[in-house]
Picture 1 (spheres, rainbow, N blue to C red):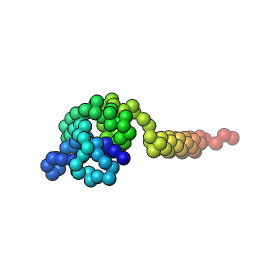
Picture 2: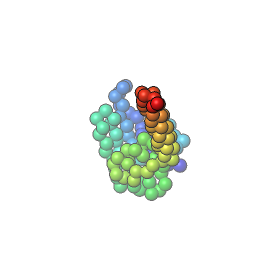
Picture 3: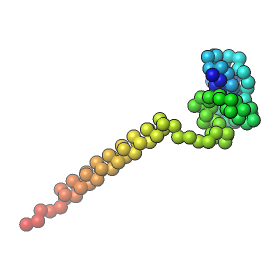
Length: 119
Protein backbone atom coordinates (compact mmCIF):
# COMPACT_ATOMS: atom_id res chain seq x y z
CA UNK A 1 0.00 0.00 0.00
CA UNK A 2 1.23 3.47 -0.86
CA UNK A 3 1.28 5.99 2.02
CA UNK A 4 1.61 9.75 1.89
CA UNK A 5 3.74 10.74 4.86
CA UNK A 6 6.33 13.17 6.17
CA UNK A 7 10.05 12.52 5.80
CA UNK A 8 12.22 14.38 8.32
CA UNK A 9 15.33 16.28 7.35
CA UNK A 10 17.32 19.28 8.60
CA UNK A 11 19.48 19.99 11.61
CA UNK A 12 18.94 18.81 15.16
CA UNK A 13 16.00 20.61 16.80
CA UNK A 14 15.38 22.44 13.51
CA UNK A 15 13.47 19.82 11.61
CA UNK A 16 11.76 20.31 8.27
CA UNK A 17 9.70 17.74 6.48
CA UNK A 18 9.21 16.55 2.93
CA UNK A 19 5.82 15.17 1.96
CA UNK A 20 6.53 11.92 0.15
CA UNK A 21 4.76 8.92 -1.35
CA UNK A 22 6.33 5.65 -0.25
CA UNK A 23 5.57 2.03 0.44
CA UNK A 24 3.91 1.53 3.85
CA UNK A 25 6.59 -0.97 4.93
CA UNK A 26 9.56 1.31 4.19
CA UNK A 27 11.41 3.30 6.85
CA UNK A 28 10.45 6.89 7.73
CA UNK A 29 13.54 8.42 6.13
CA UNK A 30 13.99 5.73 3.50
CA UNK A 31 14.00 6.27 -0.24
CA UNK A 32 10.56 7.52 -1.38
CA UNK A 33 8.74 6.73 -4.59
CA UNK A 34 8.06 10.43 -5.20
CA UNK A 35 8.47 13.75 -3.37
CA UNK A 36 5.23 15.70 -3.37
CA UNK A 37 5.83 18.73 -1.20
CA UNK A 38 7.55 20.45 1.69
CA UNK A 39 6.52 21.55 5.20
CA UNK A 40 8.46 23.67 7.68
CA UNK A 41 6.71 23.69 11.09
CA UNK A 42 8.82 26.57 12.46
CA UNK A 43 7.81 29.06 9.75
CA UNK A 44 4.55 27.28 8.80
CA UNK A 45 5.74 27.28 5.18
CA UNK A 46 4.02 24.67 3.01
CA UNK A 47 4.61 23.88 -0.65
CA UNK A 48 2.51 21.18 -2.30
CA UNK A 49 2.61 19.66 -5.79
CA UNK A 50 -1.19 19.57 -6.20
CA UNK A 51 -1.31 17.70 -9.50
CA UNK A 52 0.98 14.91 -8.29
CA UNK A 53 -0.90 14.69 -4.97
CA UNK A 54 -4.27 14.37 -6.71
CA UNK A 55 -2.85 11.68 -8.98
CA UNK A 56 -1.49 9.68 -6.03
CA UNK A 57 -4.78 10.06 -4.10
CA UNK A 58 -6.75 8.88 -7.13
CA UNK A 59 -4.47 5.83 -7.30
CA UNK A 60 -5.47 4.94 -3.74
CA UNK A 61 -2.62 6.36 -1.65
CA UNK A 62 -3.53 6.77 2.04
CA UNK A 63 -2.35 9.94 3.84
CA UNK A 64 -1.27 9.82 7.48
CA UNK A 65 -3.10 12.06 9.98
CA UNK A 66 -0.44 14.79 9.84
CA UNK A 67 -0.44 14.80 6.03
CA UNK A 68 -4.25 14.75 5.94
CA UNK A 69 -4.40 17.93 8.03
CA UNK A 70 -1.85 19.61 5.73
CA UNK A 71 -3.86 18.61 2.64
CA UNK A 72 -7.08 19.90 4.26
CA UNK A 73 -5.40 23.24 4.99
CA UNK A 74 -4.08 23.33 1.41
CA UNK A 75 -7.57 22.71 0.00
CA UNK A 76 -6.72 19.43 -1.71
CA UNK A 77 -8.91 17.28 0.56
CA UNK A 78 -12.29 18.17 2.01
CA UNK A 79 -12.38 18.43 5.78
CA UNK A 80 -13.96 15.33 7.23
CA UNK A 81 -14.94 14.69 10.81
CA UNK A 82 -13.45 11.39 11.87
CA UNK A 83 -15.31 9.04 14.27
CA UNK A 84 -12.81 9.66 17.07
CA UNK A 85 -13.49 13.39 16.87
CA UNK A 86 -17.24 12.79 17.03
CA UNK A 87 -16.91 10.61 20.12
CA UNK A 88 -14.70 13.21 21.80
CA UNK A 89 -17.18 16.00 21.04
CA UNK A 90 -20.09 13.95 22.39
CA UNK A 91 -18.22 13.28 25.62
CA UNK A 92 -17.39 16.98 25.97
CA UNK A 93 -21.04 17.91 25.45
CA UNK A 94 -22.18 15.38 28.08
CA UNK A 95 -19.70 16.71 30.64
CA UNK A 96 -20.84 20.29 29.95
CA UNK A 97 -24.49 19.31 30.49
CA UNK A 98 -23.72 17.45 33.73
CA UNK A 99 -21.63 20.38 34.99
CA UNK A 100 -24.47 22.79 34.19
CA UNK A 101 -26.96 20.59 36.10
CA UNK A 102 -24.67 20.42 39.13
CA UNK A 103 -24.14 24.18 39.18
CA UNK A 104 -27.89 24.82 38.92
CA UNK A 105 -28.48 22.42 41.83
CA UNK A 106 -25.90 24.30 43.92
CA UNK A 107 -27.55 27.63 43.12
CA UNK A 108 -30.99 26.29 44.07
CA UNK A 109 -29.62 24.91 47.35
CA UNK A 110 -27.92 28.19 48.17
CA UNK A 111 -31.08 30.24 47.49
CA UNK A 112 -33.25 27.88 49.59
CA UNK A 113 -30.87 28.26 52.56
CA UNK A 114 -30.93 32.07 52.35
CA UNK A 115 -34.73 32.31 52.17
CA UNK A 116 -36.34 33.00 55.60
CA UNK A 117 -38.87 30.44 56.81
CA UNK A 118 -42.50 31.50 56.35
CA UNK A 119 -44.78 31.25 59.45
